[in-house]
Image (cartoon, rainbow, N blue to C red; front, side, top):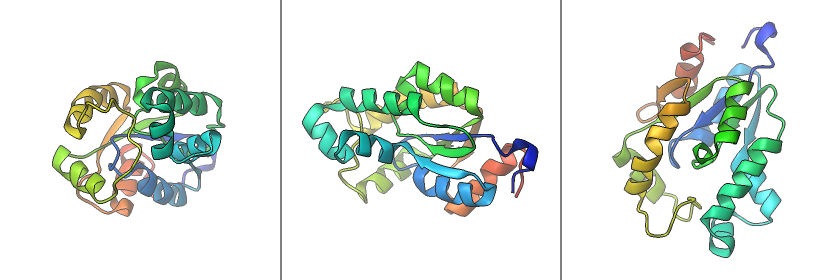
Length: 174
């Protein structure tokens, strides 16, 4: 449990689709006593469509716009925020997340991420149709690293192990 004096802290999770932001985020919220916010769900509610439907209907740039709108308008206080993979394209949104608390990059290697994404097709990845997953990985990795206050290996362990590693990395061992 996070100490009472830091109970309002927010931890934001960034990373590629398939890195486990939503899965780890729920576990991290339980371990820390913070609420959980999945911005992909907020985007879907705002758009009245799934991410994949939104991509098909309005295109990836609109999905990124909605992601920025959500990140600039939601209550970030005292929460674990699981962002969409393209959140790092918005400087304004990322600066807001960093002002609210530490930003944690859930890092995994390309092969593992591709395997995870292949197991869940139609994920609604915000990218140009000409880009493959490896292209997106190469484009986004430097952005994730730039904004991260902490990088955690999300490739090998369980969601619980990754959540504990985050808390330890932030000096908040459970």
